[in-house]
Length: 253
Image (cartoon, rainbow, N blue to C red):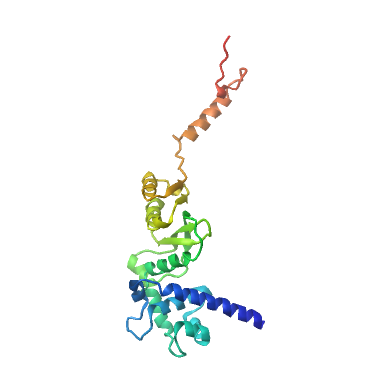
């Protein structure tokens, strides 16, 4: 049991070290968003590490602070002593201050640790929002139940390269270019389903040096496939006269 506990602590410590390394590479603007506006000498990257750790362990703010204070190696990475950690409310405020740009930077840097092949796929899914701020709901004058999340995923490692979240469910052909083109320098091809079928999107990808692998939509009833199937059905109902009518075989006397 003790051995299992040590393994768990070692794994978590490696996670903390890696996150600390990534967080210290954030831009100055991102670090300012995370830093305590009142000063108190608590750097923004340290807030980022504790917030990452909270999500990783699915814990409350109080639990993360208590746990981190008791871990000597974690204190060493953060260069903090017992009693120097932020209050849970301070950590919560840091999370609320940070914009999506901050987390997108961290996501991108974490993906760079993996071997990527330049071939990516994009798709959207929907998540139910269990709890939403009542203040936020009043401000936007709507009830937010489901969030549309668009993922850009590397096909080699399955790593999430980028994402876009929206409560307004925008059209995929509008979000696709936005997500893909801000990562154009790292992509060689992009796969997507027919929801992203748009000629202007394809042209934008080609102009950026990215090969579009996007399925085409089939529009009924005037589509080629629909017409072909209808013609085949009609021909199959004709009386057989030596050869199937749909093959249109003619014989010379």
